[in-house]
Length: 115
Image (tube, rainbow, N blue to C red):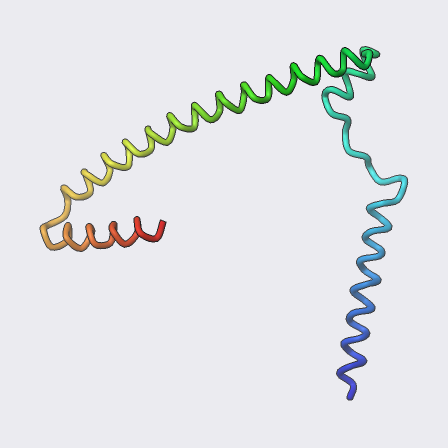
């Protein structure tokens, strides 16, 4: 019979804790998020609305270009890793006898099916 009261008390304590956390996080003295680069430029340089729009497009284009460069480098890295793995596997297989090699091939086939 005391179990429902314990559950209610636990729920009330949880609700009170959530409200307290929300109050602390949302109070006026809570630190605000830093201004974006564009917001900083706008404020410091007193940019007009048309300048903000133009600079926003320039920055967006830079983001796309950087993303493309990173993707290209990542693709090259994937190829390098695949080459290194193939070399490692070849060296590993060279250390195994026929029975071990056969068991390794079965293990490798099972691992590639799980991916």
